[in-house]
Length: 402
Image (cartoon, rainbow, N blue to C red; front, side, top):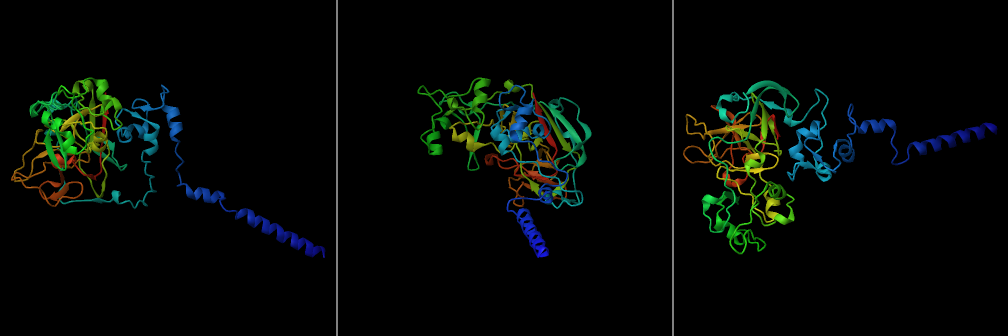
């Protein structure tokens, strides 16, 4: 009888133990370990990052306050281009991709394709007067973590072969020589006084009112006004303004490009960040498409000059379009002229060939291959607001200081 009681008691203990171990929502130590990749710890929260790095305790991070990956990706995270990282921007920032164990990386972006012809970067093509230092070669880490011999190119992002501006006319009677250009539906328009006066009809929106009763155009005239208006979250005071940031506001900007000497083509393309996609031979960077949806939402206009460039507080002067005003390297055949290099080291060429024909075999990035130039890109049409669609190579980096 005692034996039976002991047996029943033992069975009861086993049942209770099973119920506790199998309780829904409770994980064993082994399960918790399996959820976390080996060798990788959970990163710090956004709040802890701000508390740690925010030295002046203003609730946001400036470029001088951040370090490591945040510093490298600052311009990509700073979507409103105000020179600071807010909590919201950090919350929405893409998380760094987890590194796979060696020999077990199946990402398509790591698959390199060798062409019969690959053309190395030629540093002699850059305009010497645009360089702040001699171009050097150094071993650097590229976007996919590999090390490669790279050119280090340091410039002031100030074009030598054309003037910068103008951008905004000052009166609705001004001609096209007083303003720059704008784009819509793949077409380029002169931003003259007539264009400003007819924005209501141009956009079919009665809210447009960039000029006053006396015909004068509302234009930003100081650095403070420029910085309040030249960002996606436009200060309400500068709704219905023509935004004109002058190069003199940011003349201390120094741009350093790290570009692989020999480009490496990847089977899968990489999306464009907001940290430069390439460089013209005059040392000015080609940028990703301008955030027109945010600009137009505030009924502001941020024209490009006739060379396709304008100024913002973070990058200084930069291009959003290729218009044929920068140095071109003519080809021996009918092919379009070369205008610069992408950040992955592949050459960038004009939109049309010398006979005026567009290329019909381009990939999503705007690139294709031939036996003379190897893989290379063609800039988008000036009205497309897109120099390149993406990058097909392992990218270097661009840092802007000052």
